[in-house]
Image (cartoon, rainbow, N blue to C red; front, side):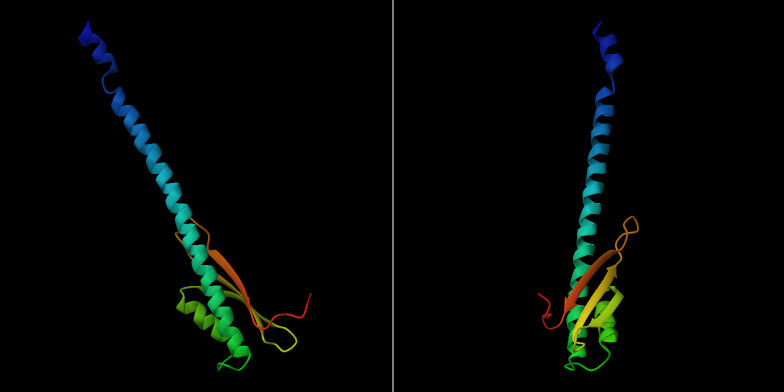
Length: 123
């Protein structure tokens, strides 16, 4: 009798552990995707900040070159793409920058935005 019962349930633990292992792998994959998205967003924001600062320096004449070209160069050094550059303000010293950084193919590009220059006079 004991041998018959053990035969019907043989391998059920293997099936259960396989399911648990697959669930753990799925959870780990989701965590890795979120981590990759977070890293890409941070890199895009950093590239936008640095590009905006460099562009504002060029707009104020502290650095040679066109502000948007300087910003694009700094963005490329950060492995980012400059997707937008707007020079504004009464004196033309405010630079608004948008950047994108590619992540893994399963995720869309991360974007970052920054503004640099003297404070605006708007309340």
